[in-house]
Every structure is written in C-alpha cells, then in structure tokens.
Length: 354
Image (tube, rainbow, N blue to C red):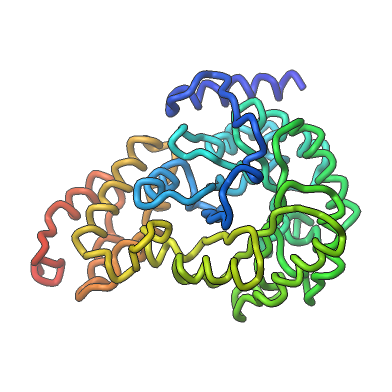
C-alpha cells in the first residue's frame, strides 16, 4: 500500500500540471447518473481516442452530458508499471462530468483503484465488461467476465467498496458467444449498480452485424420486473443525434452512448449540426487545433502517431480528401503536420500543389 500511496501522490501532481482544479479536487456531491436530465447523451470510452485532449475538442464542438476516460487497467494502476497508466486519468474541469473506466481481473486492485479515483475527483467509475479485443479477453478480462459471473460479482462489490459514495456503473455486451440478455443483464442488475450501458452485440459478433436494439430494450423490461431503477443506456450504430433521441424514446432507455458517431461528425452532440454541415475549412481548423492541443498536453510523452488515427475523422467528405490523408500521414511531428495544414487554403489541396 505504501507503493500505491506514492503513485497517488505522483498522479495528483500530474493533475496539477494540466488542470484547473486543486490537488485534491472534489467530485460532484450527488450521484451524477441521477442528476443528468434524460435522455442522457454520453461519449463512449475509446482506446487511444478519448484522452483529455479529445474530450476537450468534443466539448468545444458540442458537449455530451457525460464523458469517459480511455480504458484504464486497475491491475496496471496497482503494479510497479503504474507510471505507464497514470496518464489515462488526466483531466481538466472542462471535461466534467467525467467517469473513469477501469478494467482488469483482480478484485483487490479494483478496490484500490476505485479509492484512488475517488480521491482524484472523478464523478464516477465504470467497469469495462464489454471490450471484445482478443488479447484482452485472453487475459480473462472485460467481456470475458460474461463467462465468469461470480468473478464479475466480486469485482463489482470490490469497486463499490473502494468507491464509497462515488457511483459505480458497468458497460457490457448482450452475451459472449450467444445472446444472454436475460441471464447476464439480470445478473448485473441484481448488484445495485448506478448505471448500465449495453452494447447491442455479443462478443463473438464484434461489429460484424447490426446492433440489436430490440435486445437492449429487453433490459428495460428485466429491470422493471426486478423492481430496479438502474439507468440503462444503449450503444451501437448510432449515426446522428436525432437517431439517438429516437432510439431512447422507442426503447424507453435512460440514454444513449455514442462512439464511432463522433468520427463521422465531431459536432455530433451539437443540436442542428449534421455531418454534411461541417465544411472542409472547419474540419481543417478542428484538426489543427486538435494537433496543437495534443502537442501542448503530451510534449512527446505519447507517440505522435496516435494522432494519425484521427485523419479520417477530419479529412473526409470533400474532393481530394483521400489523397490529402495519404499526404498528411507521412508527417512524423506535430510541427510538420501543423505547417502542412496551414499551407492549405480553402481553394487548394495537396493535389493542386504537386
């Protein structure tokens, strides 16, 4: 525990560097899942995407009701390699309400991590029981816990104990190999979690079939039958904000979580902004700002190549976009990328210059 306490002290110093909050910030005094107006519109946790920089970019474009961190390993936090994990918990007040999402296989580490996250001032903790990535489930973590309901129980209870009054939620899928909504979702709802997000596919299905919103809707009926009041959010294949509202109403959900939708439209959560409304010039401006923020925040601490996965998010929907992405992909530093972006006028593309 002494090593854990030393890590926590380092983590808090990191927050002071980036944040606009005191060393020991205070989370919201009431349960965030009970205070947000329905339907809740949430930005999904996405690996190597939803860091503190991306969340600020999205907040400027159109703020969702709640955001999540990247996946943060509870086992990693409690290991000698915690310094390779701590950056995932950076945030500023601009990003709140903010939920820290954690994953792992050791209940004791969940409890310790939850206690740390509470002290770091987050507004909630979410347990990842839905990630279908093979190398993760081979460790027995995330969506593999669907096959281990007793371990899932131990993890939830340990997290709740460490979190104290901080709300604890779960994000999961409909089943592992087969749909098991009745058994698995019913099992989770028995644990008095503060919110439940359901991705409308099994682990085996990955993203190869359409999300099954009818099955997500069944979770609401299970909740009612059990006499619970747990907020339930749906996730999967949401194209725009209007569809999100329609799905929430049709299936009587408390909210909708959106992931890939923001890659099609960074203004996803802004009322009245469709993907086609975002001009080429605005996309270039947003990308330039994102690159600058990334460089200012990480200053070489994270590999710049991570930024390249955002090329298709911003450089799309206009003539020459594909070629422009290819050219921009060659740049290996923020300064070179920004210089290249600055050289593009509203009437000029890479194709015009070569």
